[in-house]
Amino acid sequence: MIALFSIPLTVLSMGLVHRTWLLFLLYITSGLGMAGIGMGVMHDALHGSYSKNKRTNKWLGYTFNLIGANADIWKIQHNVLHHTYTNIEHADDDLNTPFFLRFCPHAKYYRIHRFQHIYIWFFYGISTLSWITAKDFVRLNRFRNMGFFQKKHAYTKALVSMILWKVAYYTYALVLPMVMLPQSWGVILLAFLCMHMVTGLLVSIVFQIAHIMPNTDFPLPNSQGMMADSWHSHQFITTSNFSPDSKLLFWLIGGLNYQVEHHVLPDVCHVHYKQLAAIVAATAKEYNLPYHVKKNLVVAIVDHTKMLRFLGKKPEKVISNT
Image (cartoon, rainbow, N blue to C red; front, side):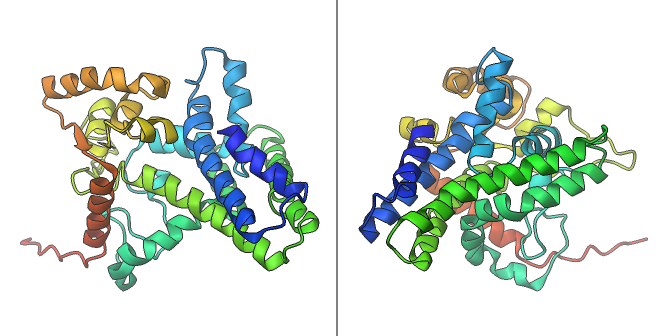
């Protein structure tokens, strides 16, 4: 995956491409590698599950910085907030969307949400571009206000590191091709955007069809801030698998079609998910917990679209008798 991402960009940065169709092909190929790094390399590494060696996990985690994002921010957003508070409004950072998207039935409703199942795909496509350009900086400030990065100079170091990594990414992924290639800057920029459209769609679809589904729950804490279910039970009711029989998909997306196994055992490397699936399913049955699974990717996307459409409907008012 690292080669799939880096080799096409290296060829582009050396100015070796003179045909426009090849320019687009190489950028799109690099986009597949970028998605592969995000789901199959850094995801395990930053969970500490790629290797038993912590140093190996640390260095492979930096591949996330290599593709323009930030490993430190992701560990807070994903490992801490998403995995701890899955599908809990305001706590799960994956549910903190712009006002024109509604991923939770408890979120505030706007009339524009009626069309979100139509326009969502565009925003999924640009999600990684938004992520590496602005969202990491927004999250850095928000996480500092939440109590992270409180050690002396921690915020400044994180900010400087983030800027340097992103400057490096844009330099070799966009600026050098613009300087070295004969195509116009506009054409190169369009090819670069196509790369991110491929990555954004792949990554967004994989992560969203795991939780924003008709059969997954969005539980809320009680007045004391406590959840009704244990943490493991909570993962079963808020998470869904898809395409369990696809070996190609399993390889391409780093085993994240087995999201239930990943959520109940986040410190286990994805290569073991298939073997663990039968045990996890049996455990769910033993404790009378749901084990959500969609037979293939198409069915999962269709159901995700149905859920987006449902969330786009105006909530019915609850009439109180008191």
